[in-house]
Image (tube, rainbow, N blue to C red; front, side, top):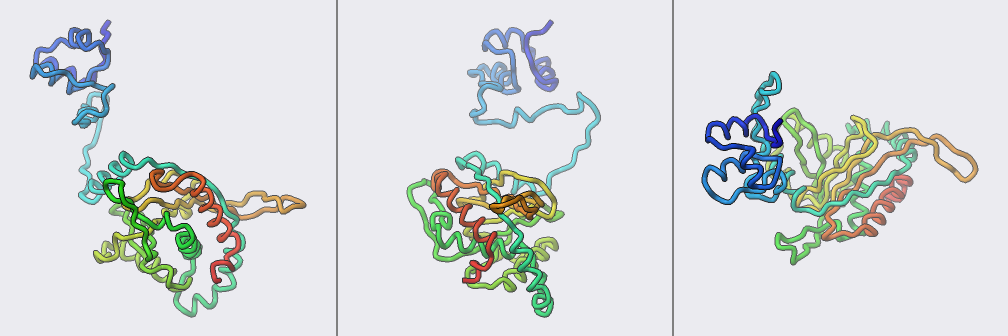
Length: 301
């Protein structure tokens, strides 16, 4: 019975190169061997760390597996857009010490307020969704908590605090995820924000976003409310230092001081760069945000 664990592709390579995996395993003092171990043995260089050395220079060997050895497969190339997005997400997740803080807000007042504005919005050709209120609340919080409206220099020595407020809106398109930006969101009312959000989403879906619609956001929102879920961990989109995730509003009992009442509650997920923002700041930021969503009249002050 073999004592060494290796993928079929690694065993095939070892066979072609005349490498005894059992001997190599004893030499390295490991039972799990990767392609780089065989290649190092062939070249006569110092063997790599295999599965126990993820920090090595070439990690692609861990994905270099002959999947067809286990059953039928179909190969489908990743689009250039998807490959670029994957590289950016992997880099962000690897380099940013990210933490996610979870909270929730009573969305009942927003829904009631939206109903009162429905006729006026229609007259102005606007589809007023809850997302416009979320953008408005985020603007208020970024004004109050300036370290969230900032970017860290590549060497981590300088923090750039921004005097503008641009909000990125993550849009799921048939071509992949893209994040168009609502410019100067702090200077716009609810109807104008709603128009901008709708227009950017339509352009993103049609691959018609102009170059100046991307980049430069103060902070982004990833809204999964139309799909579902109760919580998730959005990845910070550098050079931003935080991102807000929103999932589906659900009815749940809320204590009003005398009895439990059914209320629409929206889950909130705030991921942030711990090099810039600490846990207490994140908790205060999201608590303020939840207060604004719970009482949207404050957004108009």
